[in-house]
Length: 224
Image (cartoon, rainbow, N blue to C red; front, side, top):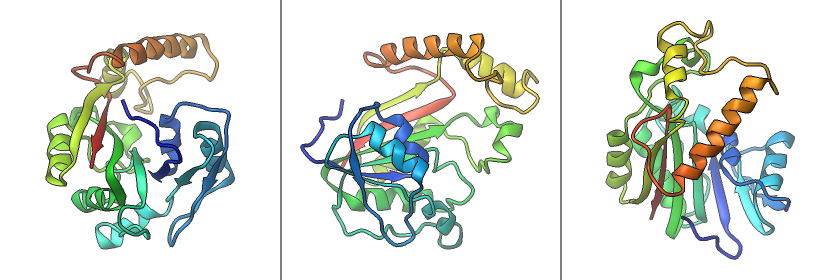
């Protein structure tokens, strides 16, 4: 879907974004800027998932700065990156100006650069789990589409995901199936986790060919 450049520069808005990349046994370099920092753990994620020569930015303090300014300009010049990955950030209470944040992603992208955005969806799925993670909003597909088009992005892919597990998520979040409001409360490496893993592997194969009509989250890929 996105062709890899020879030495791509990645910007990750939120340190968890590296989890969206395919794992690779290679190395990458970390670039830092004002109000941007990384940790040993997030740096290891970077090294595990991106190819040699890549630059990966983990702006773990950027969302907190957004709370006082609506959004904080990224400390990088225009057209600095081939790709920006924004995973589980725009939903947050700290991001007061969503349009401003997406506009910054557009600014730091090079021509034909790609942005990947992952957000939680459907307000009715708001549960007790959203409170400690400071969820301010859960999106709909139309909202993300309008947001990207307004910033002059060309949308390449827009699909819901975590679709096959959606009925369980609804039960957990709205029908009291989970005391904490989480989608799936299972012990690590349990039988349930293995089953869920197999279900998600099947869904990922489906996503290679089709977009899904509903789910727990929404994935958007757009080009500058």
